[in-house]
Amino acid sequence: MSEAATTEQAQPTFNIEKLYVKDLSLEVPHAPSIFLEREAPQIDLQLNTEYSAIDAGIYEVIITITLTAKLTAKDKIMFLIEAKQAGIFHVQNIPSAELEPVLGVVCPNILYPYLREVVTDVSVRAGFAPVLLNPVNFEALYQQQQQAQAAAPATKH
Image (cartoon, rainbow, N blue to C red; front, side, top):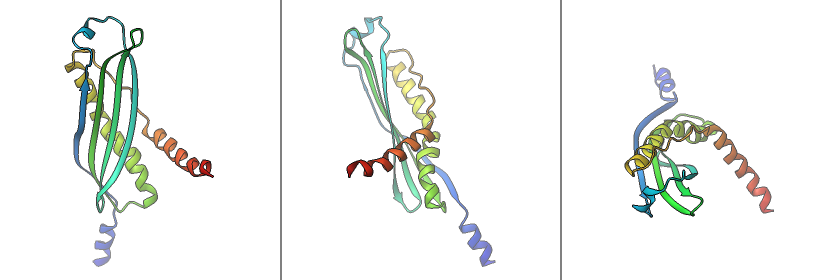
């Protein structure tokens, strides 16, 4: 009976505790005159993921996006959106080698659709056409980060 209890305790656990917008910022520096422009803006997008332990087996994962819509001909910013979509995840009894991919790939994949919705909603509420973010391959991003970290110590020597 105690063996069954031990086996049950060792089962991997993954639960979403909370999903939330941690930070949201919108700037329309040239309003209202910018609404008279007819040029389609160039969109610059920066995306970052991070995670940290809050408690034993409890982690916060954050995706930060900075989106700048700029009129290239006039070198004017139409709008700038910065959003941080976060989640609290309960992750337990997962081998340490598998924990980072869960936090760096699985959790961002869960958070990203919420971030896409926030960005689209904010762009429309700001008076612009909806910004529809393309899907992101968080596994490829995670692998690039791992390769960059592995190469970083070698370049310091």
